[in-house]
Length: 291
Image 1: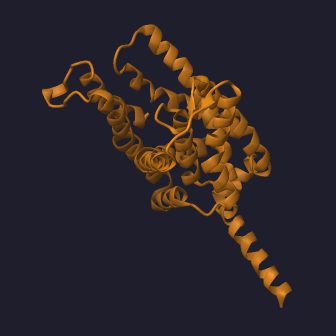
Image 2: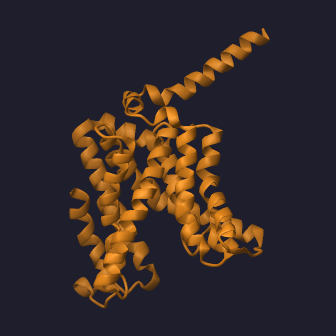
C-alpha cells in the first residue's frame, strides 16, 4: 500500500509530460527516456522508502542489517553463479534458433563491453533495489505462511500492477492497457516463480535474484544479448519458454530447499551458513586426510 501511494504520483509526472501535460511546467519531455525516468522514480521514491520503513517497523535495525546482508551476499557457489549469469541467455538463445531465428555475426569485443555495461547499470540502478523490496520483503514474508509457488503468484499481482503505469507512455487505448495488464500478470507470475526458486537455491541471496532479473531483461529486450545475436521474432517466445525451462532445472537442482521448512531454516539464519560450514568441514577433512 505504501509503495503504490508513493509510486503513482511520482511516476505520473514524466508520464504526463510524455503527453505534453507538464505538472508545474518545469519537467521537459523525455522522449525515449520517459520509461527509464519513471522506473528510477518508482525504485528510489517508492520501493526503497517503503522497504526501509516496513522492515524497520517490523524487524528494527537488525532487520535492515539482515536485508542489506542478503542484498550483498555473493558466496552462493560457482555452480549457482553459472546458472544465474549464463542460464537464461544461453537457453533463450538456443530456443530462439530452434524456433526459427538465425544467428548473425557481431564484433565480439564492443558487443560484450556494451552488454556488460548494460547489465551493471541495470543491476545497480534498478534491479538490486527492486528485488530487495519484492524478493527480500514481500515474497520472503509471504513464504512464511504460504508455499513457494503461492507466495510467488501473490507477489506477482502487485509486481505487475506497479509496472502498469509504464504502459500509459505514448499512445494507448483501453484495449492496449487491458492487453498489457493480462500480459504483465502472466509474465510476472512465471518470472516470480522462477525468482523464488533461485532465491531458495542460493540460500536467500537477493543479489542472485537481482542478477537473474537483470539477465531476464537483458535476454528479452530489444537492446539485449539475444536480440543482438539473432535475427527474427522467435526470441520473444523463446524468452518465456526459457523461464519455464530454467524454473524446472533449478527446481531439480534445489529440490531439497523448496519446502516451507527450509524457509524457516533460512529465517533462523542457519540455512544461510550451511554452505560455508559444509565447505569448511570438507576442507578440514581433506587436510586431515593429507596429514
